Image 1 (spheres, helix red, strand yellow):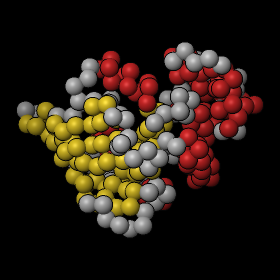
Image 2 (tube, helix red, strand yellow):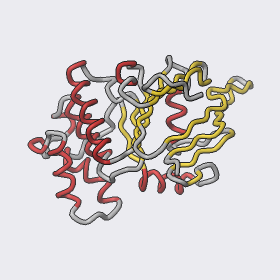
Image 3 (spheres, helix red, strand yellow):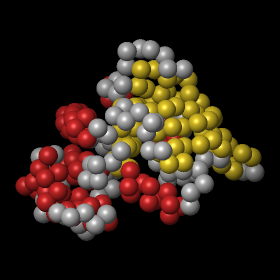
Image 4 (cartoon, one colour):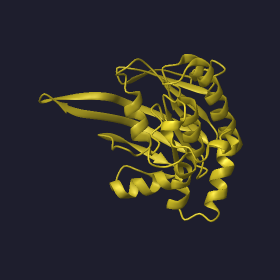
Length: 231
C-alpha cells in the first residue's frame, strides 16, 4: 500500500479578483521507507505541495491519501488528528517552544499521545542526537544546529510513518548542515520512515531516492536516484 499518494493535485488562490493557480495537477506515489525531495526555485509551489501532502491545507482539486487515509473531505480537527498519529515535521526555523527545555520540547508529542515512559523515551532520543547533556537547556541557550537536532528528536518521537522536512538545513552553516543531514537520514533509515524533503540544496536532494522538480507550480521532472525518469 502507498504511504503517500497524490493524485492530480491543484491549488488555486484568489488574487486581485483573478484566480492564481500555484500548483497544477501534481501526482506521485510513495511507498514506506522512500526518500523523496521536492526542488525548484522560490515560488514554484514546493511548500504549498508539502502543506497539502501533510494536510495543513486543502487542495482546490485532486486528492491526497496519507497512510491510506483520504484527507480531502476531513475537517481541520480530523486532519490534525491524522498528523498527530502519522506525521513528523522539521522546519527551517526549528519551531521549538521557547519556554520549554530541550527535553520538554521532545516530550510534547509523546505526552499528547499519553505514551508511557515518555520522559525516558525523550531522553533516549536526545541522546541519539548527541544532546542528552543539554536536556535542561532552553532553545535560546542552544546553537542553531543543536536546536535543529532537538527538532529531529521531537519529529521522530512518535515514530511517524511520514516525515516532512521543509528546508531543514536552510539556517545552518555547511558543517552543521552535514551533521544534521547525516542524523536525519540515519534516524529515517532506522525508523523505516518515509521522508518528504523540500530543499533548495541540490546536493541534499541528491541523497534521496527520487526528486520531483517544480517550476511555476508544474512538475517538470520526476527522476529516481539511478537517473530513471519516473514520468
